[in-house]
Image (cartoon, rainbow, N blue to C red; front, side, top):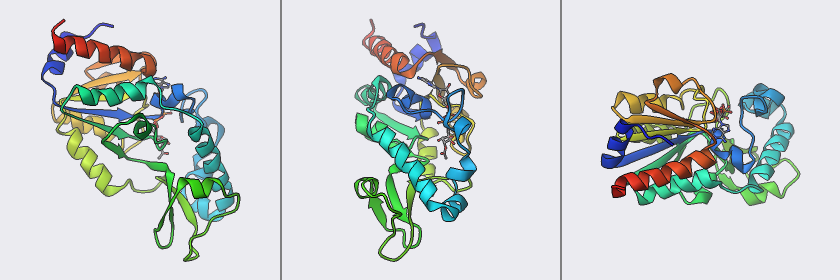
Length: 248
Ligand code: OAD
């Protein structure tokens, strides 16, 4: 792995580091990505499953789909990529994850500061009174779940056409703009407004490093890309960073 000289210099002085992740970071854990050859959106139509009108029209179908995804996720484990990101916390002063993923794997890997831009599949809430419900009680049920107030309970994820959680987005933007290094891992970077995060970071003078198995929409505007599986590239990069910082 060849580290460009400018990146070496940035690593030596970096304090604030963000890791912006997408479905690709969890691919090696066995969770399918959205786009590409085996992507979820090649097999299912987002408009039938991931939007509020679809849920109101056919809540059973939407729940069946989310329970299926939850089951897959509950049977997976964080991979070496998630753990390498967690370990960055031992190296730099302030490390935060900005994720588009809803799979909770960064939390399970131990990362402390995580901005979940698209929500979390383990969380649910009532569409009427907004009361929160947790993962366990829902996955064990095979019938449509309703809140005490009579409202339908829905997954705590962001659907197409919905706003991102405002406070989470604002805090993530604020941090992105303060970063010295900004990693972009396993995302096609085509879904907005989440894909604005690298742009905010770059505008503010951060150094952008992409890790992906292939070139993406953002490749042309990052400072450096490492091509390969994040579960392999990130641990290797982590070791290089340690060597750079110890002067070896
Ligand atoms: P995508 O499926 O669009 O992109 C996944 C990216 O991961 C692609 O660029 C792949 O090349 C890359 N990739 C796959 N395996 C990898 C590996 N082992 N190591 C490194 N990279 C790998 O997923 P996202 O960019 O996360 O939104 O998609 C963004 C949003 O679109 C999702 O959050 C979801 C979806 O619609 C909502 O549900 C709101």
